[in-house]
Structure formats: C-alpha cells, structure tokens
Image 1 (cartoon, rainbow, N blue to C red):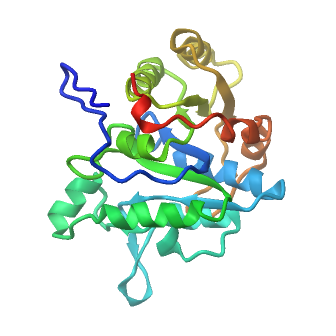
Image 2: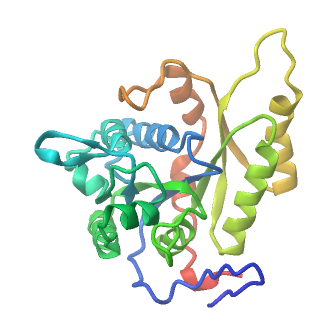
Length: 270
C-alpha cells in the first residue's frame, strides 16, 4: 500500500523484495547514541543464557575501523556477536560497512562505494532460514536513510518484526519518543514497547524531567515501557561488557512472548 503523505513520506515497500518471516525483534532508537546496541546486545545475551540459539544482525554500520588486511570492522557487530556468542563472521553480522561516521547514504556517496541492498536482504534471509531467533539493530533512528529511497523504517517494514524503541529519559525525551512512535505507527510497524536507557536520578538531586518522562511516554504514547535501564558504568560496548544491573533490568521482560507476536505483513500500513 502506498502511503503518500503531505509531508512527503512514503512507506510503500513494494519496490523491494519480500523477506521471509522471522522470529525476533527489530531494535531502533529515538536518536543516534541512545543505546540501541547495548539494549540489543543485552536482549541477545538474555536469550542466549536462556538456551536460545540467537542470530544478531546489524544490516549497515558506519564509523567502522580498519582491521587487519584493511577490512572494516563494526564495533557494534563485535559487541552483538559477543553477547549472542555467535560463531558467525563479523562481516555476516554487519554485511554493509563504512568507515565514515555518517548516514549510510551519505557515507556511500562520499566514499564512492554504492550501498548494495541485496547483500542486506540476502544476509537476513540466510539468518532466518534456520528458524533461530534474530535480534536486528537498526542504524540511527527510524527515519535515518540507508539509501535515498530506503530508510530504516522501510527496512523494518520489510522485515516485519516487532519493534522495540530505545529511548532516553530527561528533558526532551517525551518529544523524541512520541515522534518515533508516530513514525513507527504511521508506517504500520508493530511496536512491542519502549526501553528507557541510561536512566539516572542522583540521590538528593530531584530531576523532574527524568523522573516523569517514562510515565509521560507511556501515557501519551499509549505504549508499554518494557524496562528502565539505569546508567551502568559496568556496561561497555567497546569492551564487549554487560553490567549486572543492565542484565537484571532486561531479564524482567518476557522477550519470548514479544518475539512471537503475530507477524504483520508490510502491506498492512495504515
């Protein structure tokens, strides 16, 4: 269904191939740096420790470093692989990589290296073929462009996995979360809920925006707050480390139930 809007957004994905049904979650965020990788990894770690065979997938990564032989390595992919104890090569987990820390379409243009969507589609198809649970981490927010035509929101529609939104708490967080929820629902995505990350209120220092934003997001966005993850100095994506407080917060959620929600086909957008 083509959803042309006065704002110019079009959530039609019929121009791209349909992907096989998978069982898993698509992790997005309200902005870059909100902690999508940490939460995606923590969910993968939880499932793995419960005995699940888990696939992790970062379709496109930018800001990658050069490794041996000049190969680009995604720090996010390394962390996800460690959390899931994945035997896959990092190039399979993050099939499209750029060194430039920019939106993928910008990185592709400025480096002169066109982005091959088929590599992403084929990689995802291969991962879900085995029937394992899959945790997909997007890049940036839902409206981050992967190519000029295909954005993260389109990829989420094609994959048709329940979406978990990672948000922050504090001043401005309500606006960011509600905008992301609006974009997700406008595109017909199935929003499983919101994870509040890096929540911090220091003893004796009242912080009304931080303290009230989770409840405001839940009420005004009519969405479930799945977990509130505190600021955790023990967790480190660069060091492939998950802190115990992060693990505890993530373990309070029934991720199995969320992953097995009824799949919504991409043509169901409102």
